[in-house]
Length: 491
Image (cartoon, rainbow, N blue to C red; front, side, top):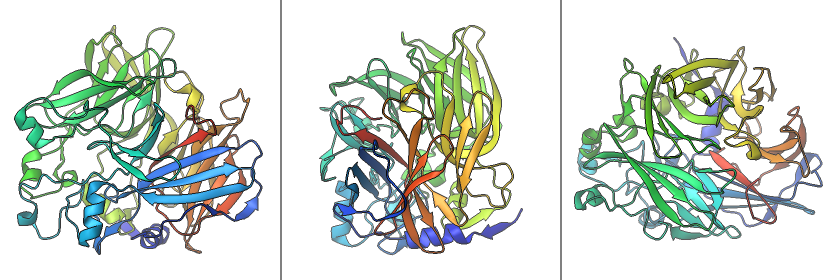
């Protein structure tokens, strides 16, 4: 095994080490093609706004303060605005001019004595955005979401759903974690409009807490599941039939080492590769099923649904191993092992009658940050679009845009040398009936010119339709959403 420094990745990290500029409604110059006439609405993207803080390089990709980028498409072109989420921690650290809070993967400089029994972890609000109940929320899985003004991107404040996300399990539990975590990957039921979410809560007992938020924005805790340890679960599946499915790998936080200040939460992870992954299924009536499958780790699920014969189908991007903190630190230096195995497309079939889980690989492609047609969530579907790479590629970088037919395993990809793309957001064409009769919206960093562009591509063949230049470089971020001009529902 050899480790190489990849110029494209290193240049990307360097160009985005510390983004400070915030722009207000800048019209983006069109460099290539033309904007489709029917593409009218707003793209929101959230992600880490920088890779260092007050001169300290973060140890983990997930640690940078959240910065929301907004791209408004109208008849005149595309207007760009960006704002950091003004979390309480962000405001305090900017005022102090130094790091005050521990992060998911980075401790405060100064060693164990600066971090021992320090329960002040930064809510970075940097992972995703969701529109539900007439509200735009910036999400981070370790704490409360933040309410954002969709027009100005001003931060209104932490949002606890009228106290539902305040810890009420016990006095000691409140001291350990006063705010209940609210995952950055909520799912909105395609028929009822109810938002489903979860949080993993450490405390006197380790709990997986399930939430439901009705279309008017009224939230409740629908179920609490006790767990043997604080499992690291980033995402889950919601089917139209109402099943909630969690893959719980033997990857858990070592809370004692974390609270002792010895390691960050990310670096404390214990991985038991000799154990299997638990598949937890919560049926619509609340019944629980716990099945077992092979060891592996999933950050993101593509989709899931119940087949006509009752089988639950889950499509996931499965990694053969958990990406531990030393590897993440090397990534942020631009260093990657030549034999790095990225996530692969895997289909799981879960039979609750026979209590069995079987799986198969769908494709030779590798990928991450999957998106599907928004009207197919929780239902049978045909296509997914991701960042990724084909089986034969000279670099272990997810530097392609990939389209995969999950029914046949066939795929295609788009690629430009020395670039890195973001998650592609799927925007259906007005009146379309085919899943791939849509546009893809993503941003792309170009290393040789040290520039970042917004691209509009055809979801069918991935060909570029329009390319516009951002006024500055911003990190590619994590997740986003599209709102049409009515803002009645995300597309």
